[in-house]
Length: 325
Image 1 (cartoon, helix red, strand yellow):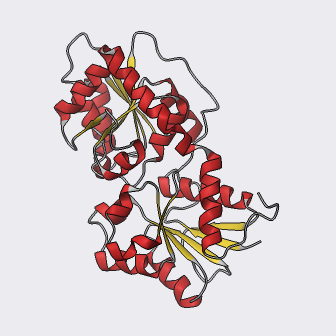
Image 2 (cartoon, helix red, strand yellow):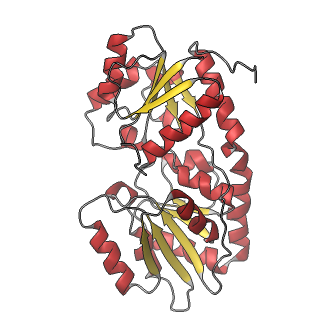
Image 3 (cartoon, helix red, strand yellow):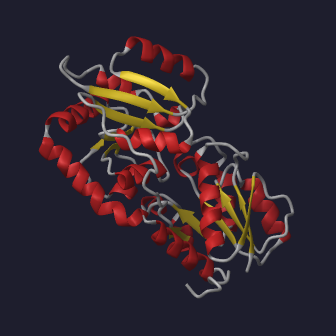
């Protein structure tokens, strides 16, 4: 049994993606027989290995662990903002990547966007998802489209609200947006949009199980992000049987596949509106989205993610499941 610390730049109780991922990983790794401690920052805790989420925000944890333990395994999970955003000093991000023994990505396209010298250290771990514990029937007479994720600029959160305004008066498309407003002014905009747009409502920050129940009743998920590392919500939608339309960015393409029929260009409101209209009115197109998503579903099985973790930990010398599973 090994002692593993997971460092994530989000506090206990947070519903931000990094914290949700860290706690889910802790549960999976504990199933392999290890003791796992999730912390906001590594601070000299005794550990046989460190798993750090976010090359930029967790850079102090990465440096401190490597200074303290030169030979112990350090695994670094990179995010979309690490690779595609300009929020962090590139030198800081690169140093974190260089110090890591393994670089974890959530879909294979991210590896293509990393420096070539680092790619040998990259391992893909698709995020798994469980079917929602509570399901509701789709609302009658309404083609609900979910937009799920905290409201911040990188998510381009109001693109779907703008797109639905372009649809013909006869449309039954209704955008239901879930997530906490994390950037100034976004709560006010979401509230105003709810008041003025009859085809839009913002439900705010719901507990995870409630959010999954809402997603599962939707006819479609729309991912409108400017960039993505590997959106867990796509896995959740696929496992719930909800097809997807998404921006053609690396995180979405790596998750859904190169040939997926439901992509649109970043920021292209008219293209998104056309996809929403077609998904509502063209049963053949909608079925093609559903079929393509169903073909990807095996990637997101919990047992597949557990096997990936077992393999990557074994590579860096962390013992296998004591039961030999």
